[in-house]
Length: 168
Image 1 (spheres, one colour):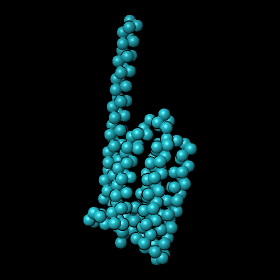
Image 2 (tube, rainbow, N blue to C red):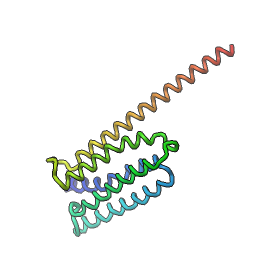
Image 3 (cartoon, rainbow, N blue to C red):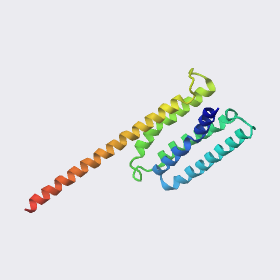
Image 4 (cartoon, rainbow, N blue to C red):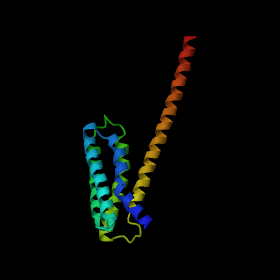
């Protein structure tokens, strides 16, 4: 029972940290939509927990609401990233590219949950794979940033040495 509770609560809360992370990559006027959807997500989580713990409805009975919220989150992220100017956020392409596997994984899991096309024990398998791919893409971006910074430091040191030799 505790694993069941934890699984459903984490599943309902899953989009919230992702939205918080991704809102920094969109234009400032679009961030208010993230705040609205985050508030709806928190309200959804609280209402579902209250309904479950009071015995009115089980988490499985209101799972379609969580799925609907997940779809809204995917649409929000993709649409706001497309509307964000690359000039204001040079990492827009990396973030959009990294979010695609998460969105595709969530959509495959939702379709499979309601249609049972693929026989699988885990109803979040493709979402988990999408999150792993998301993590690896951002890890790769972080490593590339570290190497760019290291290279710029070496170039700066080289130019300092050249300037010092030229001044002698």
